[in-house]
Image (cartoon, rainbow, N blue to C red; front, side):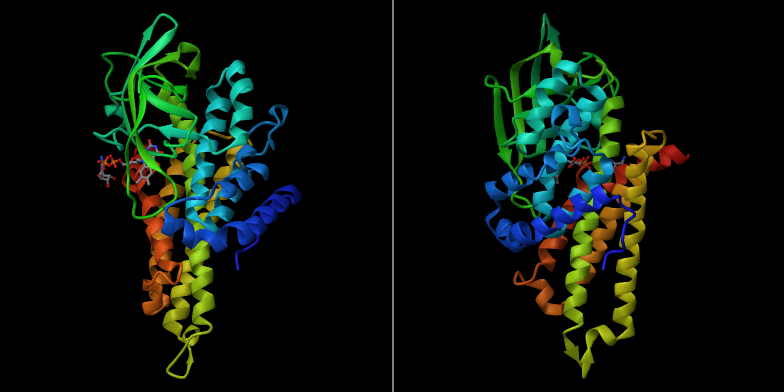
Amino acid sequence: MMMKLLLTEDQERLRSSIEKMVRIDIAPRASEIDEKDEVPVDIINIMSEMGIFSILVPEEYGGLGCGLTEACLAMEEVSKGSVSCASYILGQIFGAVSLRYGGTEAQRETYYPEIMKDANIAFAATEPQGGSDLGGIRTKAVLKGDHYIINGRKSFITNGDNAQYYVSLVRTEQGSVGTKGLSLLWIERPSEGFSIGKKEKKMGCRGVPVVELIFEDVKVPKSQLLGEKGKGMVLARILFSYTRTGVAAWAVGNAQAALEYAVNYIKNRPQFGQMISEYQAIRFMVVEMATKIEAVRSLIYRIASMADRGVMEGIHPLAAMAKWYATDIAMEVTMKAVQLLGAYGYTKEFPMERMMRDAKGLQIFEGTNEIQKIIISNHLL
Ligand SMILES: Cc1cc2nc3c(=O)[nH]c(=O)nc-3n(C[C@H](O)[C@H](O)[C@H](O)COP(=O)(O)OP(=O)(O)OC[C@H]3O[C@@H](n4cnc5c(N)ncnc54)[C@H](O)[C@@H]3O)c2cc1C
């Protein structure tokens, strides 16, 4: 049903191979993943072996050397089968993009190969006192000799439990206020002074641990700094331009899967002597769902093609538009899909209610949709 994207042969080959893998290995297990709150290791291994985690790793380091377009295709296709499984790709995007734009040659040589192996990266910005206002970050990294000494807590960190590497936004300029004085550090999972705190019990995106990270006098070599000291937010904006576009693709995958399921259902469900799909009120509902998905998909791949051509100017507010709009559409489409299935849509026998719960999370993380609107309005006004 999805309109053809203008993809190169290589991109279409990658997309269709992921689509096939998702159909066979992921989609049939999505309900079980949600029920057990666990993504099986073999699925992570399949994604790794297919090269999904290495999409943004340059070829000279053994990666696929692709761009944001391919990363979005992967997010979208995997999300169609399971929103939870797609979550594991996002951490790897954070890792690859932070090395690309902020990594030293030594960091790239060491960590690019690591990114390809496993879903082993978490991005850690949010703290217990707030996630929207990153200027309120309290986790301190104090430079002593050749090391930063880190103290603080990060909360709601996706994959924080399993990660081996944390790309973390911390305050390196003591006494600074707001987002000035923050830096990004690449932290190898510390063996001393580090622990996992509360594990959240979530409404959706189940199977992906979201946990608290506790740092108590954790020593990190100063060579782990990404980008410039005190300019972490400059680098973070570039990362968010990639990852928010990725989240938008993730939302589109979820919405597309819900739409397709619902369309198939209403074409086979008679009421009042004809299929539900024959009623104009229902047909218009489907038209609106499909059109909104197509519109935001076009925006996503336009942003991706800008990034892949190195056109970064103006991309940050565009990524905010895509993130906000796509995740709101996913929420709307999945809610309508529940409605189209009637009582069955409300049961766990059908995937609609899971897709709706998953969509809600997408509106919140990676910066809430209100925060995206603040970014867009600051750009416009
Ligand atoms: C499933 C899940 C996974 C997550 N994964 C990660 C992760 O991997 N790494 C990470 O760092 N964080 C992660 N987060 C945290 C997420 O980024 C934050 O929850 C989010 O940024 C909002 O922060 P908060 O929850 O503290 O809400 P708050 O900042 O307290 O906001 C509460 C509400 O107020 C609104 N609000 C706040 N300020 C304004 C304003 N100025 N104008 C209008 N409205 C406003 C918000 O939009 C929101 O609706 C995750 C969250 C979830 C739910």
